Amino acid sequence: MTFIPHVIDGEEVESLDGARFESVDPWTRAPWAEVALGDARDAERAVTAARRAFDTGPWPRMGYAERGKILHRLADLIEARGGELALADTTDMGKPISDATAMDVPRSAHNLRFFADHARMSVGDLLPMDTGHHAYTRFEPAGVVVAIAPWNFPLMLETWKVAPALAWGNCVVLKPAEDTPASAHILGRLANEAGLPPGVLNVVQGYGPESAGQALTEDARVDRITFTGESGTGRAVSRAAAANLTPVSLELGGKGANLVFDDADLERAVRWSIQAVFSNAGQVCLAGSRLFVQRGIFHAFLDAFTAAADAMVAGDPKDPSTKLGPLSSEAHFNKVREYVEGAVGEGATIVTGGVGDGWVIRPTILTGASATARVRCEEIFGPVVVVDAFDSEDEAVAAANNTPYGLNAMLFTENLSRAHRVAAALRAGTVWTNCFFIRDLRAPFGGVGDSGVGREGGNFSREFFTEPKAVVMEITPAPRA
Ligand code: TXE
Image 1 (tube, protein in one colour):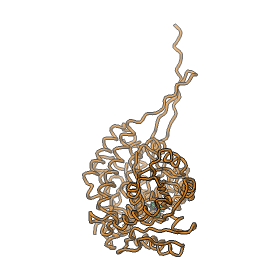
Image 2 (cartoon, protein in one colour):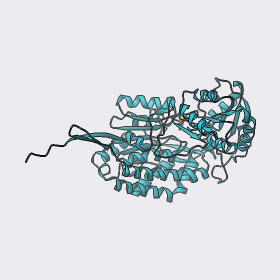
Image 3 (spheres, rainbow, N blue to C red):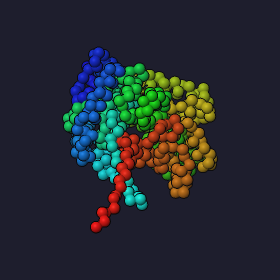
Image 4 (cartoon, helix red, strand yellow):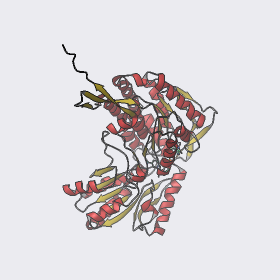
């Protein structure tokens, strides 16, 4: 069986105690790899390596261009080994190989290229003062960054965290989710091959609570923690970080609203709405899992939406024609299945969907869920959408905002003023109008309320991964002749 080690200080290593766990392929439902099971001592070892690399190594002292060259080389390697990386994520968590190949891998390479270039071209402020001084800003690397990643977009979210941290001169300890160790291991290996000095990017495998993940968040030698995962876990990470006053960036759960107005381009609204909630089997923090459709087009929309959902090819994620794979693990499949099975008791009608082969849940569309139904209020993280009709714009906005989450929202309308008005009124970190999932990496990314703390992307990442410094300088008057 394949063995997946840690990557610490430039070396591929076992856990200190030799412990291992298994990674299960959710399509075959059988273990496919053995993984080093990290604990607190392995976490400590990785932080020590990152600390030394930061305090005494070349990485933080290199120029942006030199660092950028190495990060571009890493992006080249990701592209060259795209097939292997895509297969790693597909085997670990059931993502369709076509998505992993067409989206996750290219976006991962792009994360590295973008932040390498962004750091190199970034400008600071120069503040001329009328007291005979001027002030300017510098962006010093923060130090050791811990990046804790989820399993839904393994490589893509890992590089989203690691790339800006490295570009700004930090040294990193990455802990991938226990369900998806493989692509992070390849990333660590490729980083060595690209020429990152030892200790600059370390990958520790293992679990979160009372394990490697928790130990990383409690280590006082860590300067930044960036985390993506469940809101409850975000609270635990935040509490651990508070003990050391370590700054955290948290990207947490969501319950995205998707508003389709009666003047929308129906074909476009259906196409994007399908993608918004059923891509990656709905295991997307940004999923448009609450769909609100204006009454005049409700039936026409629902018919087209249902037909498109039924047409999605579900099955073996390694088959290039598959659009919907199994859920990532048995525990997660059971969780989503319970939501679907409980929906009818909460007043909902199942328009289409339900349990498929193995750990597959077919695209599931629910109507008539009660106001307090769990399927309406909680993040399901599966291919399940609750659809409602609305009459007025105000009603739609109020319904969309009626959630403790606020990661993102979507709206579909051909009315320009309404598009701007509603985008402004929605309580969310990102609003997509007439599209979904399109990103400009300069834009802020993060959530409101239970969806997170802080923003990353462009200058927002610079702010988080550096210590912005003000330098104030006196300009002495010229000596009198
Ligand atoms: O997330 P966790 P899980 C949601 C989604 C899903 C649920 C549970 O609803 O069903 O969360 O998924 C590490 N200290 N999202 O259990 O537990 C853990 O090892 C330090 C939303 O996978 O939050 C993993 O690396 N680390 C989401 C990472 O945190 C800890 C993405 C995420 O795990 C830790 C994924 C601790 N105490 C799930 N506990 C999104 N918003 O994108 C766990 N970890």
